[in-house]
Picture: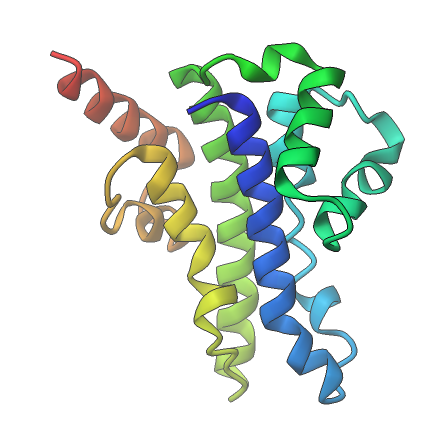
Length: 173
């Protein structure tokens, strides 16, 4: 997978999550995006973009994010700005992206549990399950319970990343 494909996929993921949370906001839960503010993937994309947009990240993705720029146009624009995004993502870079995403998922899970314990559940699969599915895609197979082991505190992030790296090494033999 090319680096640019990962960046574009992360922004598409953010778009899908935002779209799935919109009905809650429209129904009067104005703070839904504040509650789940961690579902902003700027830090994850910047692993590969290397802060090329600096302080104007949102301004540079908004046309794609809101549909006024096609995926192809956005991809081409990214490649013009940073040609190295056409390179295949390395295992180390993939682990760095996964590392950021694990932290986001842990925070999302903690927020979800906090509200579930208060009797409020946000059962919106597109918003609540899609990040884990994306992590599975980056790993290249179903990660099983490995993400849950981290979000529940049963494994450290380093243990999870070592486990993933070990799986990749076994597969390459």
